Amino acid sequence: MDALLIVTPGAYTTVQDKGRYGYQQMGVPVSGVLDAFAFYAANMLVGNPDNAAALEITIVGPCLEILTDTHIAVTGAEMGMTLNDQPVQGWKAIRVKPGDILDIQQVKSGCRAYLAVSGGIDVPQVMGSRSTYAGGKLGGYKGRPLQERDMIQCGETKLLTKLRQFPSDMIPQYPLEIVIRAIPGPQNDFFHEGLDTIFQSDYMVSAKADRMGYRLQGPKIKVLEGMPKSIISEPTMPGGVQIPADEQPIILLVEQTVGGYTKIVTVISTDLPKVAQATPGDTIRFEKVTLGQAHSLYHDQKKLIQMLADQLSE
Figure 1 (cartoon, rainbow, N blue to C red):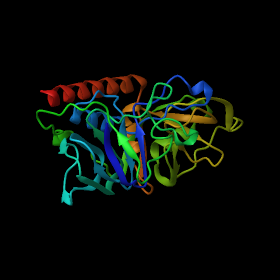
Figure 2: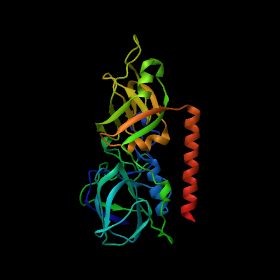
Figure 3: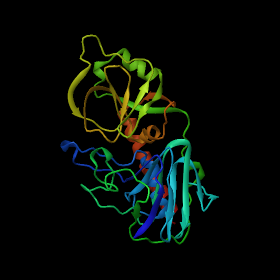
Figure 4: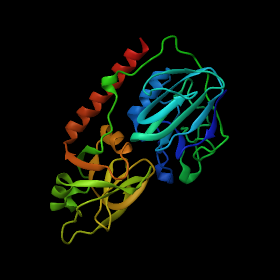
């Protein structure tokens, strides 16, 4: 069913779901959404399953013509947004009809927003996922970011009987100074003073920040004397913090498969959305946590998401 016509595509708008797993050994990265919490929230608001494909919108949003009776929800970064030239708010379900024009403007805080449509974005699954991997030209809509005049389809639409709104006290804030929790390792034994440096210093997000990773700028992180600055390439995962030859950290994200630089710490999964919402010039500080604390925080977030899903479906 035709759902959306792209009038203008925005800066970088792609179709994403939770990601493509099981193909990294073939050089195909996981891809998928960068801010999983905002993605889940958008789907909850329109009554979709948690892995229904949505649009991930970066920095500047698209202008869309609505082609069917449906509900939409926009979560994540705060962006100016109008429906038929009238301001509308994010983090709630909005009923729309054919001919409506939704205009999502430039970001005010955060970096990425998520637009969910009742029934989910309907594009072919590739390797079990609808996510776009633009670097490999696969998945999503023709394997690329959206362009003007693209026609986006949705799955079977079931309209809500009651409009849903996310609790205001649960909506994340996206400050310019961010604290991100991380676990030492997996190659923390290559460092000594470097560990103190990364946990005691402020780092600025550089202009080289995208879905592959975020390059940071700040105090150099040195490996131990006599230790190699690189390792045999090994599989990577989102959240790993590599230390390349210039000794400036890189937070790896969802479009990596292997890497040969040492990884001093790993950002915990519950804090990866904070990275996804950071923009160049923002400040990041790392806070050390244990593996046990990371597991506890993960389970707490899962319980919170389930509680919110139950509340919104009542």
